[in-house]
Image (cartoon, rainbow, N blue to C red; front, side, top):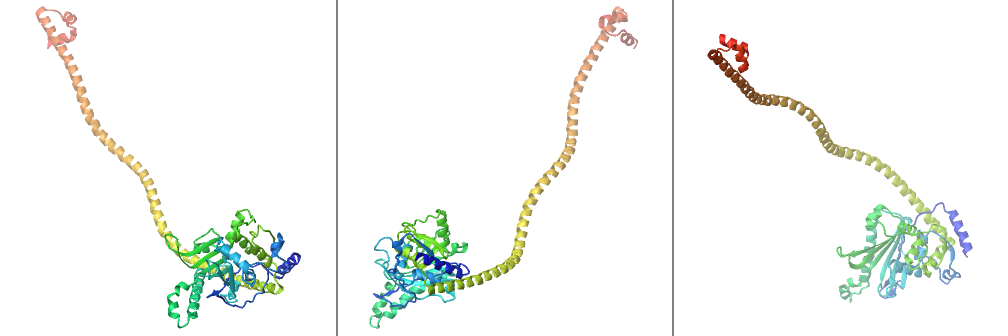
Length: 458
């Protein structure tokens, strides 16, 4: 069986031109007023009683087909016979571990929310699950391959529309007699709806929309803003971002032991490339038989299923090419318009910023140049004023000092002349009274004999 599956994978890979990214899918199991709804299914029932029981043959080698397309995704989690796989997946996504909380029964409603053209991008199945705490819950599980406009609003709308449909069924089921009675309990009969989105893409825009840029599991509820307490369980959303899971797996060293991590085991299966050969072990499938059967099932497509799978891939490749061409043209137009608008805005901003920067730089340069020129002019004016003040102050100080020195010198000269006059008076007296000669008097008084003679003569 394993050898034949490998050959089939190789033939399928050769038949397809390219490996396309994953798509979108939604599940619903429906249970209403104590009775299962009988919904026709269009998928082949693949019984777990087939000749090969995967769980009994682990480890095994599986050549898996890409589960992120409409056909393979619904085979994995939405076909008749996939109930155990869907139950395992839902319990893993909801992190339900207590036995009383875990979903135990589901039923599929094989109806797509999307047209055949849109199913190249996203697909859907609806599941209603039953357990003691999740009785009657409706689960919409969608896989989406790339971002589409307003997809956040679309996911919210789908949940609200499904809740509205539940209310309409409650109203239509009421008879005319008990309609008034049931109307009073109408809102109590509404059953919770949970949307599970598996995103095979990640981008900055998605991170902004989800308000989370790191976790590969993101939960939304209707909460009270301050306390973050859940205000109502009627509508909730869980987002599984596959690229973030792959990044987390790589960061962990690509450890393939998912023991106790059933959700990670399912996400590992959903991120496999087409015809990738996987060594399936009990650790890889988190010791969950349903995950093991998931690996086995997507590696054993019938020829009819393989044909539809290839058609899905071709349709998606076509959509991707159109999307890429639109993106390229839009980018070119955006560059042209952006450049023109940028030039206008840039010029305006440049004028404002340039003026501001010019004022700042001009002020700085003006301060430097002004200081230099001020130093030169100040020095020149200082020299002139200093010279003038120096002349005035010097003249004043000279007058004071000259007067003081003149007084000292005049006093000294006056004393000398006074002594000289006194000596001459003594000389005259000696000459007239004693009749001494000029030479004799000079020896006594120290006066010059010539000055004595000249004085006598006068």
